[in-house]
Length: 444
Image 1: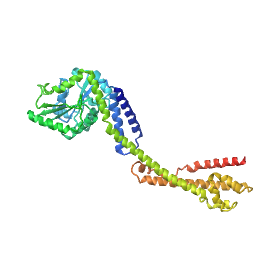
Image 2: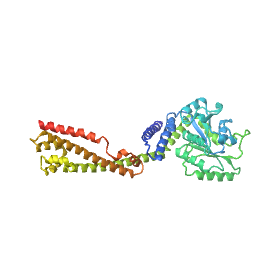
Image 3: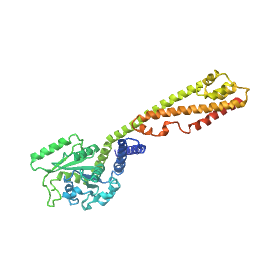
Image 4: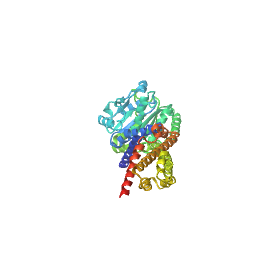
């Protein structure tokens, strides 16, 4: 299973890298953002976890302002390691409880994408080896930097503990994050603080919370069932910074079990990784749609180009076959040696026979007039070819300019509205080479 997950992650990373490398400046902002988001997410969060499944299990406490995350953090740590009360909502750092060795591994792996200055180490004396706990900044913080850190921790976590209160559980911002946790497939526990003392009132709150969460597809630690733990108002120990142990017993038991059992931690880390990959499906689908739209637009632009150039090439062949492109002075040279009605017959046999036909028509005549006719005909062939190529370019650019997106952007380049400046110089030597080969062939 691990190998399969690793292979999937590496494949997605390779595709994300390729997509990011192919992003154009003229692409829609949404498409560019999605390509960047996929690349950054896979590189910053998915691959580090793939390559370090044996790294410490990362438990992240998430929730809105004043929900009681820090109080629960202190309870899990059995010590006052995170500030509580009115000061905590203004704190811009996450608080990390981990052994020194585990903290070092996390900083190189799942937490590598977070500025080291935004993570504060709690005293490690109560930390359990193999498991780290982070008290995240508030999800609804007025400071954008706080929300960025909290979002990054959602992506890095192996287990989320969503902490809310009896009056905040349905708030829009925290609920949006719960939806992200569900989409990410992150296993979660839910703690509802400040519950009313009356048991019937508690049932009302918990039932309504289950109703709110019913369609979120949240996952529990062991299975699809999500454990919701209610903590009554005022259930604090004498310090005022921790919950009474029996009030938080269900959460403590779950976390302590993980702390003692390496295999359970590893299984949960695998599930978190699997969820992270599954959670990429909407973004992958959106990026795939972006690429498919770009490919379809590219095919449409190529079709426009082919149609215009094919039409002008056909018109060029008609002119060459009929000789209608020749200038008056060239015709006068020609008519000096052959009858006028032979001109059309000459070109109907194709441009490739120019020299042979001319020589045959004026055999025995002085050499100089032949050279004049050949040079003038070559010059006119070049001129009409450049003219037709220029008309094709103008038609293509004109059609592109009427389309939204990359085509319209490309059409702003004035050089695309005419033939390549060096087209005549590229044609002349080919005509001369063909003429010379024909001359050598006929002299043998």
